[in-house]
Length: 518
Image (tube, rainbow, N blue to C red; front, side, top):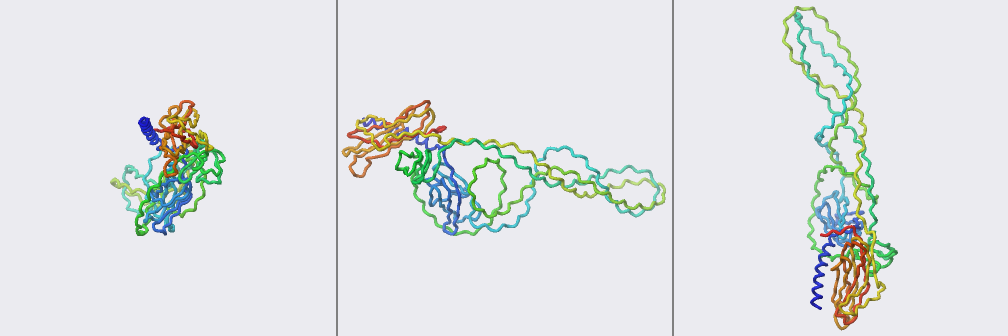
């Protein structure tokens, strides 16, 4: 009997170990993102510190990073964190990230450290950006009216009258004047309207923060106490401490063991404040997301330095041609000289220099706003939260169930579940009130495809000495049920010289959308 029992225990422990590895990688659908309401740096102490306030920071040591640099957490609660800053931290703006390792969630917060100096002078304009790709050719504009004639050149001195020669050939056409500079860019068109808000996911578990004995909690409200999170199993749940009343609360996640504190490093000397780095280039504008709920108004931050001038935008459409200027006065006519003899035909003179470029016309009117951009795609619907909790707590009044027959399973409780996927948890308290001999106790969950979900204990006799004579046995598994299935919690004892007592049994099942095997 003893060898068969040991073999069965080892086989089931192997299955349970592989099951727990799978479950540890699952992020609950009802995980709550941490919220940061303020962050204050204290540079007067050595080493400098930063204090972060908010909520949902978790029951175990959270992660804190400043611009991707991990900080050492000194103290923490679910609503406050104190961490050490680097000794050489420079005044400026940083991104602060807090990670809740209990719920595998994180959030970011912009924080200003140190005093901000007065606004510096406007920097010089940056170089003109490279020209963008040529736009498509627009329709041809109307032909403008002919500009006014230029003023007449000064009359040259009258040369000696030569003989009239035959009429010379027509001279070559002069080169065209240089093209005028491009007009300024038109103003940017109006931004397109935001896309419609995505559908709201079903309500999940309601997080209420740290448990308070004067607060009435509703069904599915979740709280934390001493680092462990619990979910309320009843409505109007008031002054029932979660760790003492398992009939009204179920454990969601237990607190992990606190790691040893690392040795404090020696404080380095405070370095001189370095010059402000150049401003980074502006990133591309992302798609407009759905509007979230309005958060509390934060304190007004100091005015930042003026950013570099943006790249020159694409040229706007050409404005209409300006009105024709007034015609200048004609110069006086020179005196007619006497007609000379026809001289020989002279060689053709060199081509004249190109005339000076005319003045730029006035800027055209701003073009009309472009058409509204296409509507953005609707965001994906968020995962569904916990919508139901199946629960049974037989003998919750404290009356024990007695096991007096050796190696015989006793039915402690049952839970009927419809078809679907579930995370199933159960627990019992086994006690050996006999004073003469030790007892072995084993409890397991069975039903449908479930097997290998069990826990066992060796209970010393109750002799009022130090030793384990009463112990809580937790069990947890997962299953996908194809139809309505009854889950049974059953226990046995050996050698059952006298009664082994079962106290406060409970079974709970949480529906899940999918089960991911890793």
